[in-house]
Amino acid sequence: MPELPEVETTRRGIEPLIVGQPINDFIAHHNQLRWPICAQMPAAIQNQTVQSCQRRGKYLLIEFAHGYQIIHLGMSGSLRHAPLDDPLLKHDHAEWRLPGVRLLYNDPRRFGAILWHPHSAGPIGEHPLLAKLGVEPLGDDFSPNCLYKGFKNRRQAVKNALLNGHIVVGVGNIYASEALYRAGIHPETPAGQLSRYRLGKLHEAIQHTLHTALAAGGTTLQDYINATGEPGSYFELHAQVYGKEGEPCPRCQQPIRRMVQNQRATYYCRRCQRR
Image (cartoon, rainbow, N blue to C red; front, top):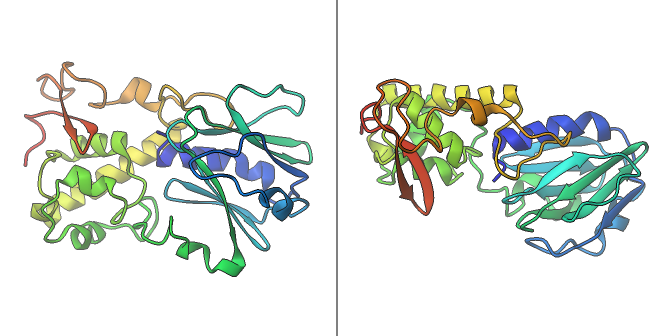
């Protein structure tokens, strides 16, 4: 699944192409995604100028004077810039046509979404998909104290607490495993038992892991393609534990282990990550 660095990489790729430009056409070739693309959306944004291209968690927010398109890439979706005369690929379900620019939304599994939120429905932050999201991990508001307040009295495993999105948003499965390894924290540790010192280590590890992935253009996954049509590169070469079951730990050489938490694979080192 595209995670926060992949979504942010996509945002940075399309932002200079679309902001300040009018939408000549929005075409839904197949409207059955996770939720159907509403039939009124093409008319709602046609000839409307893009005001901004933002991100909240794993959601892209394309702002117009009268509302927002909310885009989620689902399990395998991508947005890419393509020449105007390129033929559609098999799973290209929607496209935006702007002056000299064409964006294509591709989603083999159709778990993504393209939604419309008019300003008349209220502030974008109150949309049901966004209202309960936690603090942004790359923003100035994210601090060790945020983790302390969010984890306080929680018996839930710290890996699962990171993934639920209500405390800190966008730290998905791959990056949670990597950050916990960097911080030396066992993924099954109850979140509420972590000391302020260890939460400081985790805070630093989350930011370092995400910034490193962003600098390299996102994680290489089977399906992930960034806004230029190229795969990311970071974890293909530099993952410390994720996907490394049985391989030696980079620190202690003990075999990396794998377990399942809430139906998601977790990779860790039993010696280097303590409860």
